[in-house]
Amino acid sequence: MIKEVFQQLWKDKFARISLIVLAVIYAVLFFADFIAPYTKDFSDRTMAYVPPSKIFTIDKDGKLSKPYTYNYVREFDNDNLEIKYTLDRSKKHYIKFFSQGQPYKFLGLIPMKRHLFTTDKDGRIFLLGTDINGRDVFSRLLFGGRISMTIGFLALLVLFPIGLLYGGISGYFGGKVDSIMMRFAEAIMSIPSFYLLIILASILPSGMTSTQRFLLIVIILALIGWAGFARVVRGMVLSIKNQEYVQAARSIGASRMRIITKHILPQTTSFVIVAMTLSVPSYILSESGLSFLGLGIQQPDASWGNMLKEAQEFTNILYRPWLLTPGFLIFVSVLAFNVIGDTIRDILDPQSKTR
Image 1 (cartoon, rainbow, N blue to C red):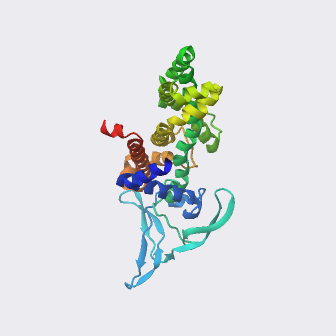
Image 2: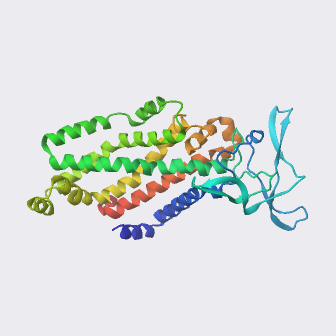
Image 3: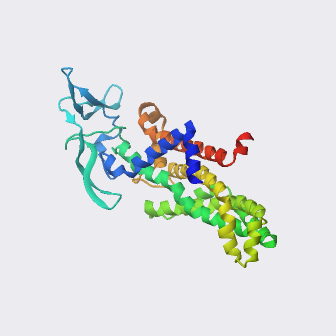
């Protein structure tokens, strides 16, 4: 079934574009250590708010040259009382590909020094400029994207097993068991999830590392989101449990848990696939929102949410638009997931498209 769904998904033009976009994003994030010219700890405070580096391929004589760039020089404009950056054209800094640079550990395991592109020792290349602390925005986008783009899938690994099993047990047993379990689920659903998330995130100990905070946010997101999913699964189980194959399993003495896990829940696969695809964007937005408010991933570690926080200042929007790049990537990623989810829903449930 999965192969057939993918084939039909690939035939849809917008879904195909979305798949390609997400595949490129995740591939780049996977090789972030190699692609990024600087490590996640790099900072040069003398280069705060440097604009994107200009790359030249034509020299002064008008001849084709190897790609090179110039460093920026920081100057203070006494007339306008502002800091300006101008190109230091006294020395070229050639861009080198697959050359050695700052040491890092690929995927946190393999020691390496080779990067996709670097400059010489004295040179600086900032494809998307720098932030207030002189950190390369392009490199931080790659490292921050790993958190923002994986948190949804990690939350689903916790959420969906709980929701599936809870909804399956509630729908299969029915009666008082169903009534009690659904009242509890409805109580969870009635809690304003984002506000609860803010409260829980705000009371986390200040000394926690970003990794610990990240894992706790994943767990919190999962514990908030399972109830609505369980309620839908329960409704599907109510209609499935009276099917002939379920009665046949009862007649041969299969246990209730085996009937639920082996015979009933697999029939909800189409709904689960659609729900998972449509749920990932909400978790990306939740993490980004928390980090934007300063309650998620903390500096100096990067996520798209806390990187976007710096762009909320009006002067940065006007004069430093490169700081808005995380917001654009969040928009593109969420849109791609939603397009794929809607297309999968139309494939698995053609009547939904008619409705």
